[in-house]
Length: 455
Image 1: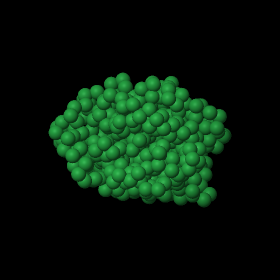
Image 2: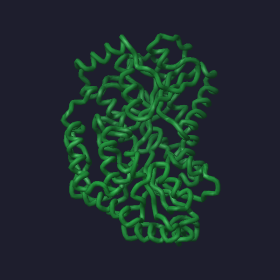
Image 3: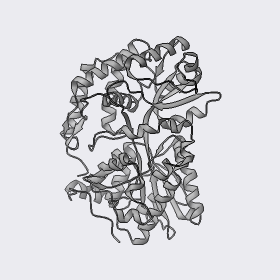
Image 4: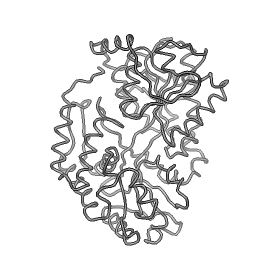
């Protein structure tokens, strides 16, 4: 059985042919950790023989996510005859990973299944590098589109056709130190954070917290990292009426509302300039401030729940980022499983989908690491509802905002690097909003004017 038809608009162009030929003659170079004997890379490119029935799987998970995934993979192996049933490899996060997946697929040496962020899966699909996930493919393992949350199922579609099977939603959220918040009068009778809505209440909460900590009210990374400033900015910008997407027409047009971007940047700067939030703190420093009681709040992706849980004596909670402006919104992405384009026999397709279904069936194990399940049987289960603090921010998945589609956008992309860097400079007081916007526009326009290298 062959894979499904290519994504809409796929064309056989010279660059694709050159990449294909280069792979046939050379290789990718592997920088990964693996499980099982050998690697998918070695099996595919170097010709190492895999055991019959082995599923090859690539991912980009490190840290707590990587540890949880390993337990899930071991469960799959246990259910399918041992280590020979699976060959898995973990690659460096971000652009290096997606480059490897792209080149391996162009060279006809992809894994059976790979992980992709929803924002990057759609890019791969537009380049014709992913097999379509039809209702018939889902039915092979008793799945259907109705088994997934509508918001994330929509996020993995291109022109009405699905190209990924979502595992989760991972929103940008608000962590809070219960000890500090309790002393600041910010917890209710149930020891939960009081509702905060609007900039006035937010600033009042940060002011009360700062009086307790003697340092800051809230913390977020502003230096040595670009994704976090983007996530914070995109959350607040998207809460505002009139916040047009940054990009349109596949990234060839810059369409952000410059007035609202400038005003949102000015607001972020006001929080650091006033001392309610630090001007310069990196990823680890921003969480340490909350963990050690030097700030009440910490803004980051929910995956840092594992880090917070490892801090002895820390009482903490998690909620969606408060609605400070006109509507609830939070920046988010989703992890999903994709089937890279390749010739597949019916048995190969069945095994690949069986592996995906095994991972979905273990969604509760994955959710313990903070991610909101996309698989509805897990999301609606009593076991998930009893997970604390995970169930405290589940509604954020309903109003998640994904990055605008473009070949240079998505999680870990050049877009996030460019825009996030400028946001960080504004929060540090190094650039004005107008200077940041001019720099964003100049740098992004270069990408907007450049043809998609995979098309």
